[in-house]
Length: 161
Length: 291
Image 1 (tube, chains in turn cyan, brown):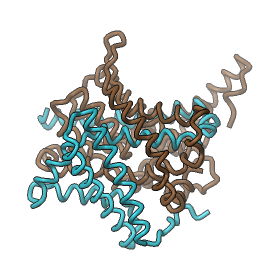
Image 2 (cartoon, rainbow over the protein chains, first blue to last red; image 1 turned 180 degrees about the vertical axis):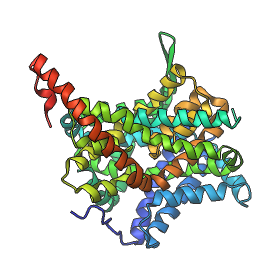
Image 3 (tube, rainbow over the protein chains, first blue to last red; image 1 turned 60 degrees about the vertical axis):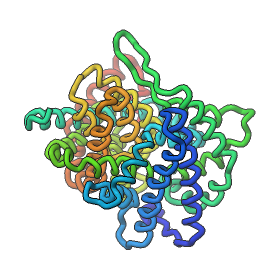
Image 4 (cartoon, each protein chain N blue to C red; image 1 turned 90 degrees about the vertical axis):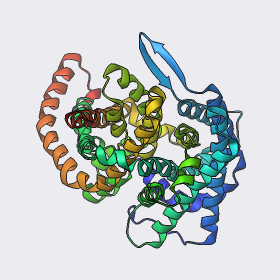
């Protein structure tokens, strides 16, 4: 099974169109979610979402065009980081509008899709059982707490906190 | 088989997923309900646990799937949701990375801490491997506990051990559980730990960047709910830490994490065998020695 052989999508306008539609739906949901949960102005939150989605689409496009086997999430992160740097000419509006989006509203939507996506895997979960769940929790706990202790030690020793 | 779903469904289902307005409306209802409930803090004997909207929207969505009268959410929608999720990770990461770019100054100051705390990602091996072995897992434990089991490590495990190997199976059970339960779990864990072990919020902020976009976002939003005055710094630190985790993840995994796990496994496996066998003798319980 060629798992690692990622299916190369024909970069048709159709695919890009589908990305845009889904991201638009996501933007509307996020703007409304922000408005209800965090009282951000609907319009500004929506513009903020459009910025985040545009960065994502560009990242996805670079992944498909560039021949390296690098996942789009890296392109997206690096691109977003660069345009928000203080010496970027567009950093001011980007930071202003995206600050209207609370990250909680995004994870809330993600987890709603995750919940429905999980539905079909409920049987698999039963098979792995509680033991698997327990190990997963320790994996996350171990990663998080060890990193936190090291960060604390380094920050304290360099006098930053 | 989650891998297959991950890579193929994106192609097959995206056009269907776009049009599935009933799915989107159902999700929309879940998030509106979740946002109306909002962030709640409950007190359990002095420890405050922050409950996030993401937790409720997850529960609502699972309920919508399970409740029989709702016929328009079934296996098909489940597949489509998985495809959509992959796309939604992008804006999430963009949001975190913008915080990093905006605060590049503080990040440079704290650079050493951010880089070194990545070593902490190896902590999973020491915490989880003994637990996995005591629960009766064998070679699966190596796949399960050598990393946070996200995409950067996926290719390595399959490449090194083969798709049908116990290591890969173990990896995918944690991958699957982590995808769905990891996010609500870390959001509760973060608020709990902030009270039990009061490290500096910045240290916890960096630790949130564990190399998984959704877990990172959930963790950092819980942390920001506790320390709202530091929201910007926390997002900046965790975004940067997460970016470094993702970039270095594969290499650290190949050259450090896997060899370390193998080594520790060879030491701990005989010990856990002894413990488990003694238990089997005492209780006559053989269920634990299941492979």
